Image (cartoon, rainbow, N blue to C red; front, top):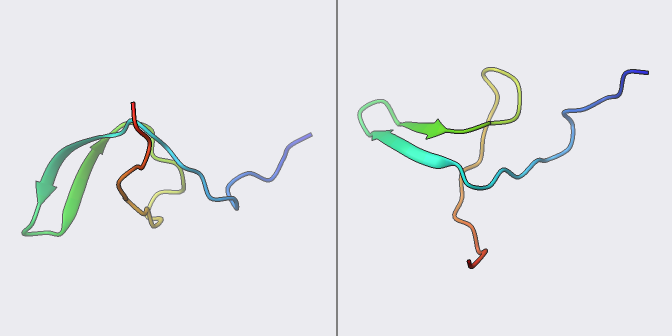
Length: 50
C-alpha cells in the first residue's frame, strides 16, 4: 500500500553550501533536499560535534 509521506519535517545533514547569490537572495546547495519543487526550505547551522 502507498503511504503518505511529506507532511513530516525532515532534517538533512552534510549538505554542502556551494554558492551564495546575494543579488537574487539564493543559496546553491549540493545534496538531497527534501520536499516538493517550489517548497520552502529552512537552512540552519547544526549543533552536532564531530
